[in-house]
Length: 293
Image 1 (cartoon, rainbow, N blue to C red):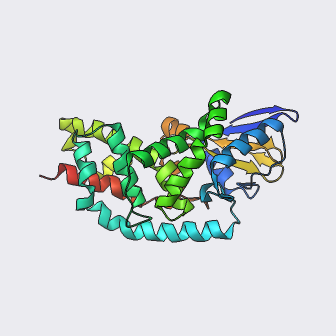
Image 2 (tube, rainbow, N blue to C red):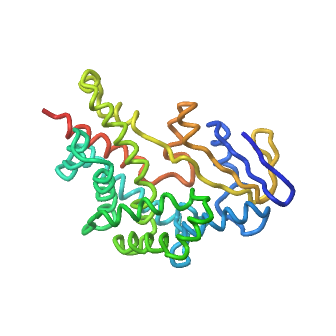
């Protein structure tokens, strides 16, 4: 755990140890309220991030605080819906044929993005139709929070690039912000999963030895990081923090360096990913469909 603190300028703590991440996620002093006060760099950074993850004055559920009743209700409802669909998708139904063919070597990065977006989008709208334009919107939305180039940010602001991306994605899921997050942000980890799965598939010797469950386990990737903010002064792993300290929780690094699978979906946390069962089922279903004789 590393803390960068300089007076009223910056106060950021990076957490990448699984045990400390678990402690942080359970702490009543850590949340996603994201107050607009505090060190200058913290405030500017959060202003940019929240600008990306806000649509028509409403924050995306993945950036909403624990006590937000709408967030909790919608997250739980989606969790139940996706769990109910997991058993069917695990069997490799016909609608996964496009992804199965991509796994076998047909198609490029662009086509994979559209296929994954279609699979995720159909969870939110039965008439969902992923296109090159909607995939480009997802790429823009994914890049926006990580972009620090001031000229690029200015250009995007002048052209409304991120706003238009959110509008397009929202129009396809009836303005459901969980759907916008799923088809614009969360799907990129699934795309990464399929790239790794194709590598496994191309290894003919290993292909026949791997079960769909083992493939799914090997192909799950945690988000690179998530943000939390201290709502009061406290201590984490014997390291003190202040009210409004900003935590960058490096989930990807924790998974990669410590082999911690629990951080992929944060399933033991109030902020668990609603797709914790559906995503592994999707990966298993595509593998089964691609490898069946």
